[in-house]
Image (tube, rainbow, N blue to C red):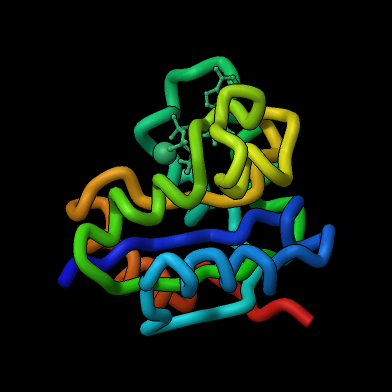
Length: 140
Ligand code: ATP
Ligand code: MG
């Protein structure tokens, strides 16, 4: 069994689509083993997206992911990383297949609804990250 970190990003949470998104992962056959409603602190967001720190859109990416509450969860299942990314769809919602979350529910690259780990190694950091109390604050 593999694990993957999923973030229902602030755009999806604000649109009231958290339940719809969770249902899609559950229907795929992935099981929720941890789930938390939170707002990411800036330092944790910068760590989360560290691989993109040199890219021109890094500042906007961090602004966006810290802009409001989100739902973070760890899903478990066979090939969980690949399975979740298939459910999520391509990074650009206009290139994501119909039937995927981004293909069905989003238009803009900067507001693409969901994050999914891109490797089992990055997913392995997730439970530690989500337990780091200094990096997260409860949201009301
Ligand atoms: P995520 O990591 O959020 O699940 P992803 O793995 O599909 O998305 P990444 O390449 O890791 O895509 O990019 C992280 C995020 O950065 C994307 O979700 C998108 O919002 C933003 N992004 C990626 N490429 C670009 C780009 N060329 N221009 C603007 N924003 C981008
Ligand atoms: Mg990524």
